[in-house]
Structures are given as structure tokens and as C-alpha cells.
Image (cartoon, rainbow, N blue to C red; front, top):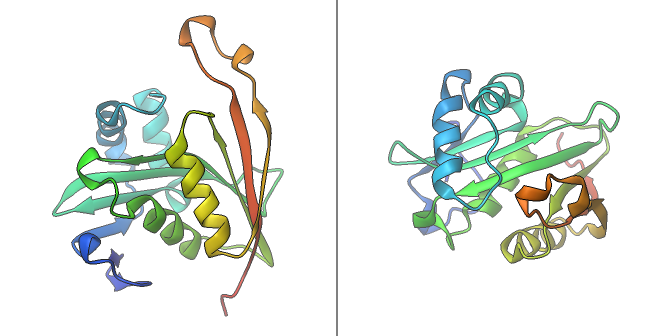
Length: 180
């Protein structure tokens, strides 16, 4: 695993040609197309992905394998919770699933953001999204942190035609800052 030209954490053989890096504003359309083609996430506007790639590039991540976009994480630090990183979307190309890319992207993102003493990771996850449940359970175990699950966004809050499930709020933490 290469992260901005530096080898990081344990290299997994199946990810050896994968690079993790911050997105560029000009990649918003490519990210929108990627999310659309992955097909298992809510698709936001192309403008939204442009803004994520521009204004939130420090808390978002692109994964490339052999020059191809194979993963994207969008996240932000809520203004009223500076000790929290909210993970909005984690997308992995079908060809890369089962290789640990989601885990590597989250760990890469956590390793590059700045925080004081403790960090909390939040995400909302629908009950049927078993892969995300496993991802955040694993995150809590890797960082020896607590995992709390509570009500997030009710299905009733979404437009009726969206047929959206409830979104449960997952909160992992505290993750201790060991950076020197």
C-alpha cells in the first residue's frame, strides 16, 4: 500500500499496487461517476463531489490501482465536534472488494488527519448494510475503542419515493492520539 509516496502500515499483497491520496477538485466528476457505477450508495450531485474533493480534500481519500479509481472515502469534521470525523461514504470498486481496501482507506484517513487527544469516528449505516457494520466493528477492535450504536436518521425523514431505510449512528472511540 502506498500512501502519498510513503509505504504505510502492513502491506497486503493484494493491495501492493494501490495508492491512497487526497482528491483534487478537478476529480469531482470522476468521483460522481465512480459512485454511480459502484451502485450501492446514495448518489449525490456532481457538484457535491466537486466540493468534497475541493473543500474537504483533507478528510477525503481516493484509492487508485494502476492509475484507475478503485475507492473513495468522503468524510468531514463537524464544526460543533472538532474531535469527531464523520465518515459519509465508503465506496470500493467491485473488482477490489474483499481485499481490505475499505479498512486500509479508513486507517489511511485516520493516520493523516490532525486531532488533539482523542478522536471519535461516526457514520450512519442502514441495517441491511452488513459490510459497513463489519467495517466499523473491525475499526473499533483495531483501535481498542468502544462502539456505540444509536438512532441516527429515521426512514421517515427521507422522501417517500426514496424507499430509504433507517440510518443507525455508529460512534467509535475514543481513539487515542499516539502521534508525536
